[in-house]
Amino acid sequence: MRSARRGPARNVRMIELRAFERTDAPTVASWIDDLDALVTWSGRSGFAWPFDGAQLLAFRDAHPAHRLLIATDTGGRATGHFMLRPEEPGSVRLGMVLVSPAARGKGYGLAMLKAALGTAFADPGVRRVGLAVYAHNRGAARLYERLGFREEEVDAKSIQVGEDWWTSITMGLSREVWNGA
Image 1 (tube, rainbow, N blue to C red):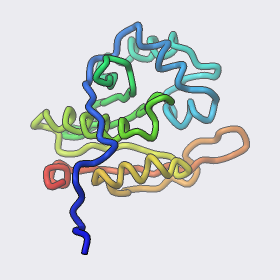
Image 2 (image 1 turned 135 degrees about the horizontal axis):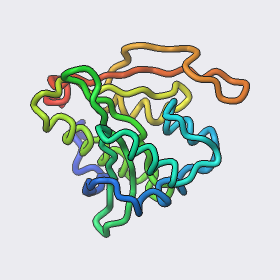
Image 3 (image 1 turned 45 degrees about the vertical axis):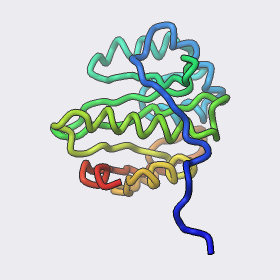
């Protein structure tokens, strides 16, 4: 009989986090290949298609309280991007989560999100991390659920993209659930 307990995860990746730098902007922008991908990544952040690194730099400069971070692999190559921004006292919003096309499906997303949550909860005043994900982005939603996020609210007409209305799901993760994971 096989044990339910598994050995080491096969696709667990080692990553490092660092602050987003100006030179990262064109790289991150190159990971977004159409309007749907841009909106899926940025929601209502005000970016326009065609998207370029200058827009990301302008966003960063306009929002100094938002922490833009880059995940790198052991060779120092950028594999992902995310943002942490303060919300109401005790809460941080995780957003603009993106894994480079070359790194998708290889465990970098999970590693980056674990590091992002560790960074958020390293602040003892943070009791909750929230995020929003579009309902059609099932892979991302499943990954967030795997990390302990739970659905809190659904907005069936969150944003219109072309002729379609997209549904967004607000999710949250408490410090207690994160510590218990």
